[in-house]
Amino acid sequence: MEDWKDLFFFMASTLTSNVSLYKSFLFDSKTMKNLIKEAFLHDNSVQKSHYKIKEDLEKHGNVCTKFLMIYITIFLCILFSLYAGCVILYLMSLKCDGHIEVCERSLVWPSLSIFSLETHYGLSLFVHGIGMTYLGVFVLTSNVTLASLCIFPTFKLKHLQNVLANFQYYAEISSKSLNISLREAEYYVVRECIIEHQKIISQFGKLKKNTQTLFLVDFITRALQTAPYLVILMASDGHIDYVLIMTISCMAFVLFELLMIYWFAQMIVDESINIGTSISLSNWYESDTKTLKLIHLLMVRSNRHLALKVGPFYEMDLQVFLKIFKGMYSVVMIFQRNT
Image (cartoon, rainbow, N blue to C red; front, side, top):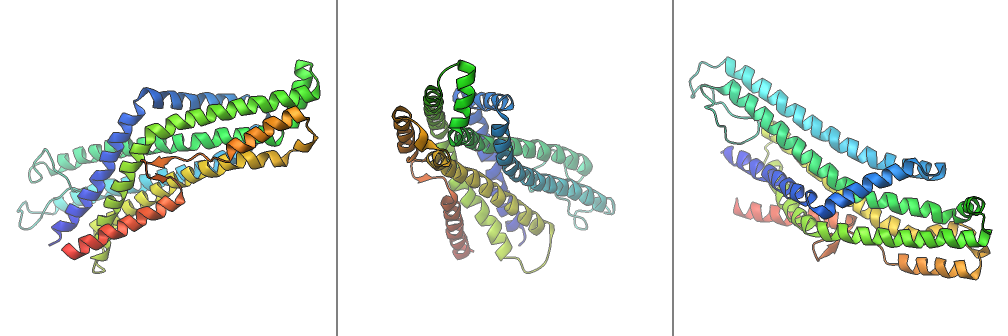
């Protein structure tokens, strides 16, 4: 009765491709294309900006890059194990005598084959490997793109924080370049920060509107997806087989993917709150009344933090990551009662 494990594994892994397909349609929308374009434009502007801003954003970028590289590494390890599985199964089939009772041929990833496994097993594995590569790259690309869209607001917020924390320094530069007084330059720099902050809020509103349904679907499917993996692990009798190894690998991949997305979502919340606190790092008390009024306005507006949403229900943060685990546990209990 090992077939149920293949069925559960196939059901769970299929949800990944379905959600990734939905993401691809989302990225094809006009709004999301504009947001992705804006991300590239911001990256180009940072390369031409002051060295202090570049250093600050490089540190932030290194943290984000490490998450993405770990995610890509896990994906490549799983893909390599699938290729290795195809080779091993094919070599094992060469020792068979051709009778189905003696050698039962199967694909690495539980699915259907357009070729006969008995007469064209090698060709079936080859086409199977191409299909897994295409689907895997499709899943990886869509998830990395989604993660990048979650990271992008944090870069703009960090950029703004750097200017606000050193607005008097940048005011001195503007005073010399524009040939105006230092007080006027301070007012000019803070005013531009308020305008930029409003742009960030507006762009983030579009991002949240276009992704909240996606994250709701993602929230539901991840709980349903990881639950069958847990059932397979809980039903294991200690015997290590291919299905068990792939289950552990895929579950680690999904859990890290969830952690990465919700970690970046938490960063948006934290960095939006830090807009107000970054002003305290400067000598704001030396500014004139006109500039202080703008600073007060910015601090009041930054009290309302930015956050992505899971549908109309939850704001995305690490607490929601824990709620997915609770949902996963509930589904496991239902499976256990019915088996």
